[in-house]
Length: 471
Image 1 (cartoon, rainbow, N blue to C red):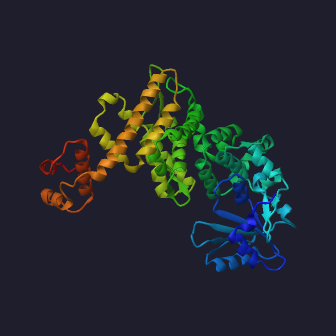
Image 2 (cartoon, helix red, strand yellow):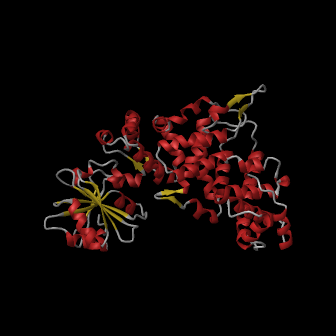
Image 3 (cartoon, rainbow, N blue to C red):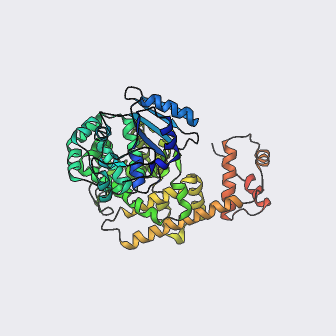
């Protein structure tokens, strides 16, 4: 099958820079993604006939890119292109030929290559990876391949979550057999795979499969204790299943979320990590505080008083183990701490909802309001105990969408709200210096304007004069 790789301008230049007798192959994820009609910015090459590291050095110089030595022992280097968006990875050929190299990879769908030659480029598929792509299955190349790099037991679920594929039965058996080997893998590599898994549209479904295979316990030992908490009047599932179901429901519900939220939810939160991945992580851990707060009262009702506050503290240790950044840890902990806030605000019904209480929540949560509401909806849809009627669920979700729309309008009003007094005037009136207190006063004044309590400059001045500063 001709894949037209040779027509790519970058590949043409690479061919020109090859020494005589050098063979160059484009392999792995780039070929897979082309065949799946998916966008891909990173290319992986196998170099046979000259050193991959020295070849990468030539390429970096020719393209005015950045050379990165990845693994000197295994002859692997990277070239970051000038736009810093595209990368080219070069590795020496493992074994006597490209077929041998491909047989050392993880899954058949990633063991497809294309030899780059002048005027032509033919696909090389010794393990029938193209057939697997068509069948939408993840199939390991062999048991030794998993033993050689145990991270592959997790990567199988990551690709399944990413592409919506099924894991082939024999591969699943090998995962169950060798799941404990994942403990030999560095936590940094595990974390990177989890981030990609949560970024996929089918993370919830694959967390269930990980739970069934036993791999879940190896990766998330902190959640094992949740199995002790059974279904109750509010929850039709045990606590662990509820946590996983929350991820699945979140993935379903995000399709219904308004378009204006999508850019925010799928934004890059930090280098290589999208906010949506962290939101799903928060969904999985949102009830991590329940086992430690579990009580059964005299009426037989299950109580988990302040579990959200304790959970936001416990999860910090979990995220620290996974070596997430402090900023990321703070974000996930915040979502867990306040995951009940929107629904609690609706306890007395929309007709009794206080505008001030709503604005107070918007101010406290800030830009993270859309994901908090989505988390609340997912939590609600995952709890369908005998006391939770369809009417209760529908009413709660309608209320949460109402809050989302009110938040959107409040953001528009903040952008158009007139400035009635400035910071200097406030400091002069109250006799204070620049401080966090000043920022709080300005936010409270904005809230009062949005709620309609302050409409004129005179009312703003009265608001400031009567303001009580608390330490």
